[in-house]
Length: 460
Image (cartoon, rainbow, N blue to C red; front, side, top):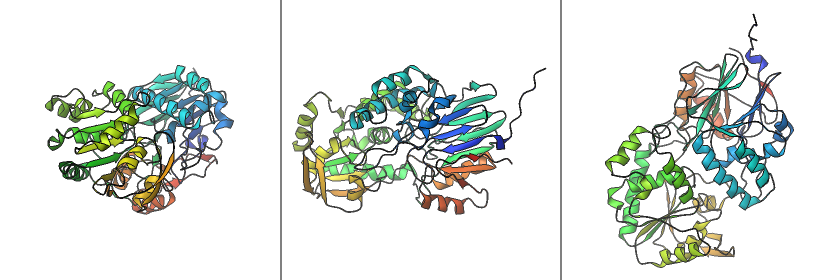
């Protein structure tokens, strides 16, 4: 009779290659004497500079047994093709929506940064070895180790990763959201008690209002602006936030006759989203609301007008829309105003005091968006032809406090419900993490990893 090897938590180590007390370069290695499993492999986007790679991944890439991706956002996925370049030939596990979304993001990254980290050949190797998994479907990683993906409520296809390592349950949340959003009803949690919880900590000091309250403000301002014949600019992240904003606008009956223009990569992401509008990936509540509206997709609303991406067509379209005598809403990339179509719209509409510029997402320090968010009026933009231009911004600035990440009370609830005796905070800046430590001290004592240093998972 062959006895099963019993592993204690002290036999399992975790190494963080980024995202310890900051956001960016999420990548975490779980290992024992015989196995190495990598969770996520992202880059850190630095304004006005090249992206930064996760520290140390290159040295273990050819040793790992499996790779699991929580979701498509580039700070979790942007370095994945490098694994193939450095010798990893195994499977890349992710959900089907994540596979479709991340491929588009990888191609976009190649256009922006070229082959600094990896090439088209590496991307092809990865794509051939992707294995897609549905939520709550357990897969075998190796003898004694299984993995399962659980809904994270963050963006389409986003998953928490539950690993059963010889009876030790390890839950990596990736990015989770406890708030009800147009397509999701918050995150799910496993029924079993968890040994180790690796949890994001993005929102610590920041209060995240319920979506319904923010949506009311967005709708009211959109109506006021467009009724006066003016334009509302809503720069938005192509993955997740833009779909949420568009669904909110589509469901607002008072805006059904207002032209809503959609520009940039958002259109590609909308098409991917349409492919996954089923109870497997989005909430039943959302699908029922679509049915009530007589829609198969929120993006087929008659007042939605995608901007064509054919060569030279976008510039002519943007100029025509900006000069047209009508009230309109323009949802476009990029979400932090670092480039993309939003620069053309700022060039054409940014000096008009009746234009409204609405922020729908967090603005990283050092980005053009953050400068404007903080009150800067003298900004530098790029036209469609990449010519730099200085303008004095005169638009009205509005801030909508959306977040794709859990509120601090949602983080506390996850810590409490999972009953984890070892809690590790990642993916958050130090100030937020200090706040969370104090906020949860009555039920938990989370710890923070040191980047690049292997640390034992703790026993009960």
